[in-house]
Length: 407
Ligand SMILES: *Cc1c(COP(=O)(O)O)cnc(C)c1O
Image: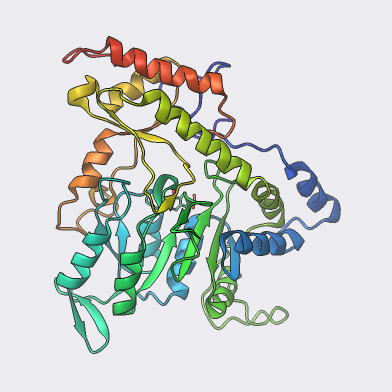
């Protein structure tokens, strides 16, 4: 039942409030039973087609290709968008690691971009600055001045349910012929200037991992309105099979397909999307109301040009004012059976990808120190949420500067 690994020292108990758990209360049983009853259990079947069609319609693209997970969708998106080995791809440093790993699977290199301080997303001015000053345009190709490598794509990651400010990024991408791959895995249902996240760049990816807005247990989707790219993605996800009878392969492909059983669950989950997002919005406004004005706590905001899907409600803890840092607050809440979580270590600091960046990323580093995500399952009850708010207020009241809360 617990989607996220428990924080140390906490065992599940009836009054335990988890960070994020899925809600499976629609047609999941019925559709999955249909797969079992009809023997369509594997990687082709009517639910795969239906999930792809329904999903493309929901996001606002012409095509969708279901994949085994979101990381696989990102890998395929890079390949079909034409990213080649030794190319460079701009990507948010403040993100879950998946898009950066996918860049390396394609043989390309990440160029990290800092977050902006207001909505914590990829900073468009840093993108423009790097492309205009750090790169050289030569005979229709953009080269990184420092490494000499071709720069061919940008992956803005819409983190925590809020969109990236895409217009300036798309404008400069068009200027230099770069492809924009939206990592929309955390922001299904969010909109940027009235357009669905995932329908704005050249291609986009979604995830249906257990903690995402909708889940298939594990799964992903690539969406695009480029028919050739969609066909190529399907082909590559199916071991690049050129002849289904003779098993002729002209290219190296992957086994990245989603099963019909998972797609059946996806269809049922997608039917509930609007309700899920309404619940997330309700939870967000309840936190905003309940924690407003608490000294040292900054709340998550929504830009005037954005409609957030509020996937993961997150606050910033200013240690100097709150008298506890984000990790101390996490441990205190943990001891009160409330599960919270910091954001990801910015990827330019991670051992896996360290050394790829020479510039400082002060905003992402500060957000990493201060951020704490609060429980926000769609099923979170009003009283339970009241307890989270009350405990944070209690901790704030009992904390005085210099006093250690708990360890
Ligand atoms: C969840 C996630 C993914 C993809 O995850 P999978 O577990 O492979 O489905 C990619 N990028 C980000 C930012 C994510 O949060």
